[in-house]
Each structure stands twice: as structure tokens, then as C-alpha cells.
Length: 191
Image 1 (cartoon, rainbow, N blue to C red):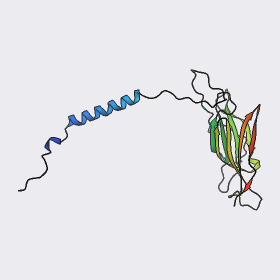
Image 2 (spheres, one colour):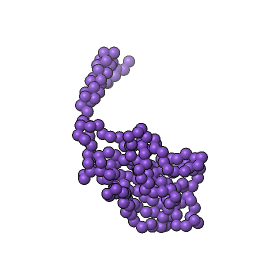
Image 3 (cartoon, rainbow, N blue to C red):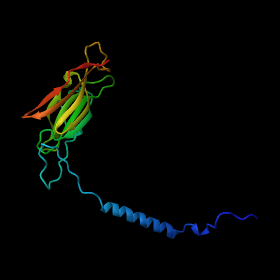
Image 4 (cartoon, rainbow, N blue to C red):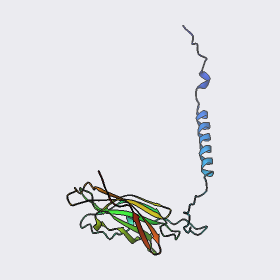
């Protein structure tokens, strides 16, 4: 019989007490991690009013709960994109929703709507920034420092297939006085 060149490892066999000690140590680590959480973070955009100190943050309106001025006949409307942020500087976030009718094919036109949380339960549309009648597709919606930005796609003629817009425009809206003011680049044809 040949003896092993390795040391005797019989003392390394695990016993229930070893597993219990490991489980206790892991539970202690998890409990400590739960107690040492950082405080609630708050952020405000410069130049915009903040929520009252000590008050709970106000949630942005739920885009799925709103009713839109969009006639989809028998089809449902679809919230394709959304972004939230304080657009008017009142310390409460608004939601910007990009909505279109559900379509089996092609690219349905989008509407861009600004929602606010009213005194009732459902959010309400307070502004239409892009009307679906303009036949534009809207993507890349974002809110930064009170400015809403988006990319609009359109068709140069009726000969362009409705699946493939051939014009693109980068636009932004900012609340000034009592209205949203739009700025943007001219339409550029895609190659």
C-alpha cells in the first residue's frame, strides 16, 4: 500500500457547528449593512425652486394613468417613452409622455404631452408639444435642468414609406413665462 504525500486532511471535515457559525456571521453582515444605509439623497436643479424642507418628495405623474387627447379609433394608445423633471420651476416634477396609437405595421405618428398631477387621482395633460396630426415620430425624450429635449423624425413626401422617416430634427422646449418655447435645428434629410 502506498501512502499519500499529502498531509492528513481529516480535521477539515465540516460539521453542523461550522455551517451554523458561517450562517450566523453572514446574518450579522447583512444586518449591519441594513443599518448602515446612507440617508435619502435629494437633488435640485440650479435656478429651480425645491420642495419644502422636511416634506416628502413628490412623485412624478404616472404616464400610464393619464387620458390623452388622441383618437385611436378601436386601437389602444401606447406610451412609447416618458421622462420626468421639474419643467416649470415650481419644485414638483412633471412627466413628458410620448404617445401613439397601437399599429400593426408602419410607424404611427407620436404626440408629446406634458402631464401634471392634479388635485384628483389621475394625472392631467397640461400641454401638447407635438400633435400627432403633424405626423412625426418622437424619440430620445429627456429632461435636464428644466429643459425637455427630443428627436423628431418626419417624411419629406408622401412617396416615402411610412416605416422609414427620412428627416430628423433635434428640438428642445423650455418653460418661459406661461408657455413652453421650442427651439431646434432645421430638418435634415437622412442619407
